[in-house]
Each structure stands twice: as structure tokens, then as C-alpha cells.
Image (cartoon, rainbow, N blue to C red; front, side, top):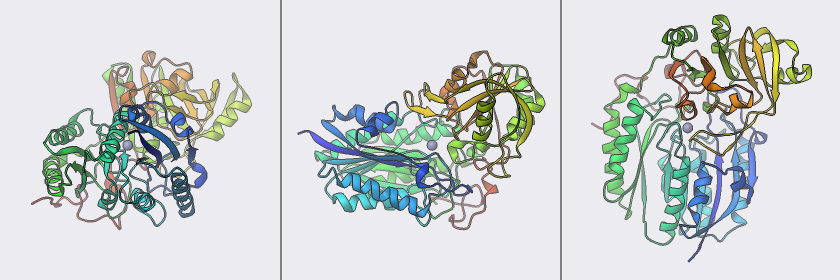
Length: 490
Ligand SMILES: [Zn+2]
């Protein structure tokens, strides 16, 4: 029997400390077949589609809405999005299963648990018998309330998230197995009293935590075991890291036990999540001293991928002061400066105030003179293992030369994931000495082969690793590392 499976999604990573609210028009909405066209590539939706025929399913596009990570979603915007998603799903019923690409860390005004709220509404619409399976970013803050209304959820295991495609495939297989009565999953969310700063799974504690869960996933009766890092730039009742397990045969006891066993092992290693990165001046000094070219210097605290504005000037200011040889900065968001460069034209020299326009936390604008080297439409398609083939629009862009340093200015708040923004502007990453960029870890997916060294820097910013800089009134206390005496599982 061929199954009809509806596919949709709502993806937003909400930084509740951001001063920029996310409005309806900030979402890129696609419907019907366009869901599959827009999200083709190594994405969650790409994986769902790729696994469909093997799973004996045909996919039906509903609605997919995605906005760049930023502040809380406005109340009316969220209600409109939710309504639109439900209506487009309602229009294709009956179906044999529903797949949703949900980030996991979306929050709207008055709704901390957007994913739980959406899944509850979808469940009410489709009834108890139709399987509902969702995918998540590992930066989701997942609630048991959501787990109780979905049949299964699959979070990425990797950061950089180069396994979105595989998780999408897994979700498609799961929806088919559940619809055919061969899986009877129970999902348990075990929350740890732990806030995890942005931590790659390529090495160190991130890799260890991933391996712990992988071992439990191999146990009989366990369908999935995932360490969700959570998204610490939120302040509500279920913020923090979680272990999510899925047990077959509705075995809630097994799911609980395995989640707690895995969580305890990760908890024992908790101090390894703590990092202390240098300020930009020191980071640039270390990068120069290492003499391993190219070296990537990444500004973790103004990571647009974590809801920071992407127009911060702390690292760029230090770079322009140090003026190392053969250096490039890619990219800083400033649509006004891009417009100014376009109006002046290639070959012109312009006086600009660059960046620092969203708030004061990320540094003041840089007043300087710039040469307009090259202009572009900012359209790239990712080449990195993470998201390969996915369209990644930077907005209209300009390559400026400031005091001998190449600076790529973009119009949208996009972190630099791979070399394509450099290529687009005529720069060969392999021939640079120093590549400065804004990203916490995703760049490792695209620069892994080219970068001979990485030096991270953490000036003030909305995605800093210094989690004690954020005020908290609703986060359950105690929580590690803010409260050193926090206990778990004894
Ligand atoms: Zn993420």
C-alpha cells in the first residue's frame, strides 16, 4: 500500500535576549510543491523526499515557513503562521502520515513552546491514529508536552548539522513503519539542569556526548537516542540540554531508563562544556603567532545562526587595527553600506559607517574609507557537507577594501558556513592567510579541509559562550554552570 505523507515545517531559532522581534514578513513561506524545490539539498526536507519511494510513500507539500534566527516571534505573526500551516494541512487530508521540519527552539510572545503548541494543534486536526513525526535541530529546547503528542522525533546528532538529510530520511522511514503498524514508539525527554554553550560534536565533549547516546541507541528496543544541546539563549521553564530516547513497543519504562542512564554519563562530564575564548586582539595575535595559513578566526558571540545581529564590529575593528597581511573578513551585515557601494559603483572610494547599527552590545559602527572592489547579488548554493545544494541568499553584497583588508559586506544576517561567499566575491580561501568570520561551529563543515588552524574569539554578544551574562527570571534553578552546586540524578 502506498502511503500519502504530508510534509511541512516551521523553523525558527529564537534568541529571547534579542531586541529584534521576528515578524510575519521575516518568514520565507513556501507551499505545495515549492516546499520540495526550495528545500532541496542536504536538508531535513531533502532527506524526507529522498527516502519516500523506498518507504512506499508519496510526499504532499503543505506549508514551510522559515525565518533567520532572531528575537521572539510576534504574537500575531505566530498565530497567522500556525493558522496557515493548519489550513494547508487540512486541505490535503486525509493522509497516512505527517512529517514536520521543526527547529525546536522557536518561541513566540506568550508561547514558549512553539513546537509543542503546533504539534498539539496538528494532532487535534489529524486525530490520534495518523502518525506525526518531526525533525529537530539539536539546539532545540524540547518539552515532554511535545513528545506526548508526536509519534517520534529525530534531532540531528552533529554540530555542524551535516546529518539533517539523514534525520529527514529517518523520519520518513519512521512514519511509514508506524503507519504500517511495525513500530510502536514511546518518546521520552529527559531534561538536564544544564545549559550548554555552542559546542561542536566534531571533537571533545561534544563528540563524547554523541558517542554515549549512539551506544544506547544500539540497545535492543531503542529506536533512537539523541543528545539535544538545547538553546541557552532562552529563559523559560524547559530551557536546557536534554536526552531524547525513543523505545519501541510503547515501552515507556525502557525509554525513561535509557535516557536517564545516558544523561547521567553526560552529566558526569559537564565541566568539559566550559570554554574561555580570548578577546579579538588576543585571538588575532594567536592566529599570527601560529603561522599556519590559512587560519580561521571565528567570532562566536555575533553568530547570526544563533540569533545575533551579524553586524557586530568587535572582531572587524581589531582586524583593521592589526592589519595582518592577506586577510579577509566575511561577512558583516550592513544593507545601507551595500546600497551605498552599489550607488557609488565598482572602482569608487566611499566614506562609510560600517556595522554596529542594531544595538550597542556588539560594538559601535566603524567609520572608515572603503574601496569598492566588487558587487554581487549574494546568491550562493552551499557546498559544505552541511546543507549541500541548499540555496543560501546573503542578499546584495559588496567586497570592499579597507586599509588593505578585504571585507565582504552582506545585506542579510547569515553566518559564513563555507567558502561560497568568498568564491562569489573572487576570493580563493586557500590562498588567504587569515579568514575572519561570524559563526560558532557550522563553518567547520565548510572550512574543515582548507583551514590549517582555528582560533575562536568571544567578545560581548548575543551568542556568547559566557552564559552568566544573561539575566534569568524563569529558568529553573539551580542550573549548571550558573549554579555550581547543581545536582542531577542522585
Ligand atoms: Zn543548530
